[in-house]
Amino acid sequence: MSLFLTSRRLRGGLTGVAVAAVVLTTAACGGTTRGEEEGSSSGGDAAGASADPDAEIPADLAIAFLPKQLNNPYFDVAAAGSERAAGEIDGEFSQVGPSEASASSQVSYINTLTQQGADVILTSANDPNAICSALDQARSGGASVVTFDSDTSPECRDVFINQATPEGIAEAQIDLMAEQIGGAGQVAILSATANATNQNTWIELMTEYAASEYPDLEIVATVYGDDEDEKSFQETQGLLQTYPELKGIISPTTVGISAAARYLSGSEYKGRVALTGLGTPNQMREYVQDGTVTAFALWNPEDLGYLAAYAGAALAAGQITGAEGETFTAGDLGEYEVGADGEIVLGEPTVFNADNIDDFDF
Image (tube, rainbow, N blue to C red; front, side, top):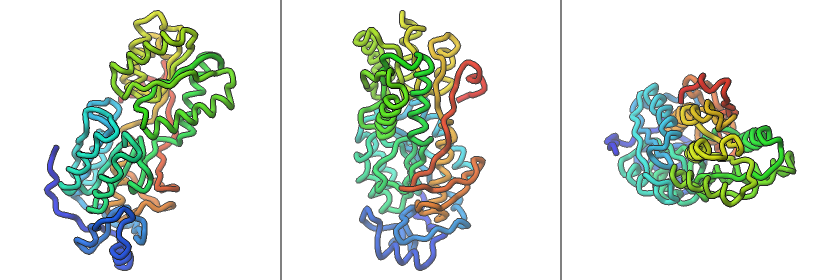
């Protein structure tokens, strides 16, 4: 873990009235604010603060990337996007994280980043509440907190970068599965961890959408591979043994879908059981080319990390506070607007298949 040896930086773009207001009200999460220490305000605390869209981003922001777990190909790509953005704004990028995606495994890393004086923390939460106390302390200490991919409870962060609308992600996966199995039959879901906010939201919406649009498509089980390759592989095997009439598996996690594809490709179920979900083209290319997988979906995780870093910089500079309706520019991606509950949507998911998968390299 690299050390952020920077001193606390002044937040740009906050008016004197806003600064005073923030000092008086203190952050909703309690504790002291950076403004108390330096005459400025904690980033992203919309209460009492005013955004200045013309504020300049400080040149040496310490931007920390904390994924659900290290050595996860999806987050490796997202980290590359954040690092690229940090380079464009002359920031200091670092990545830390746990080896396992358990609920509380990120807490100690957040505490260390707070002690080191990170200006911006970008994180995908393994649990919506387990890291809230640590993030509260980080924000009280002056850090701007951006969640991406998987959110915390909204009061625990400044903004959330949503890869796409939950409805769009859920419907795309059900539509892809329905197309591959003729809209009828037993389908199982291979998820990541049981507490992952994004996974649970998508699963709930998928279930509702399937019941509404494809009444003959029956979701018979949801199992969890904990975003571990071997466990996901074994859960796939277990599903096929438990449900001999299974016609399809949806895995809304990059680790899960690749593990499931690897099992199917070497089994008697190849071509008999459909598989779709969320994966990266580089992970899934061989399984699309050998006929194990027809189509799957994902957004560009590099863009997700890139947008998260720019949002963090905008918060740290005071260009935005996280309030609905504020706008900022995210480098090559252009202008984005903060929505309700501090949510910023990257865009619609892309469907990958044999016709276009070689056009992508991530």
